[in-house]
Image 1: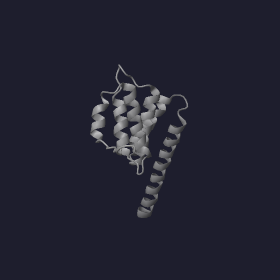
Image 2: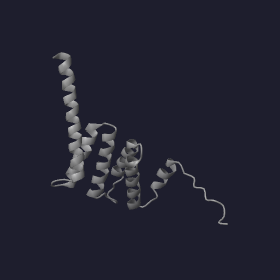
Image 3: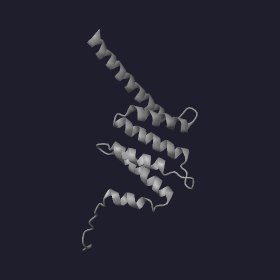
Image 4: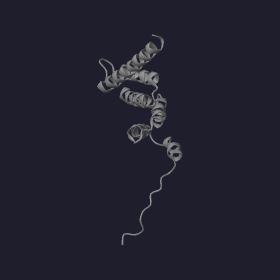
Length: 138
């Protein structure tokens, strides 16, 4: 009655990435930003996808198409969240600090919250190590 069913075939991710260079810069940025967000929101999260896409966003900025501070902040924040998921605390802290510098003044509330959560986790790890060494050598 309505014709044959439409079958959607997923194309390999390589096809998408090879075609990205032909998109105008604002569309390319929004597509990469959405892919990086999807990497954080999927179950289970895919932090490596987020890291590669946000790094790509940060490296594609040129003098012809500069990124705004808000765009850089968003990319650094998402990459920091991905680093937290793979437990690379040093890289995450670096990205969060860079995002805070871009936010200026008092900083972005979400970035500050993530940075404080990261610092608390690092302090808890240090306390746990102290306790373990105290039992071992005390």
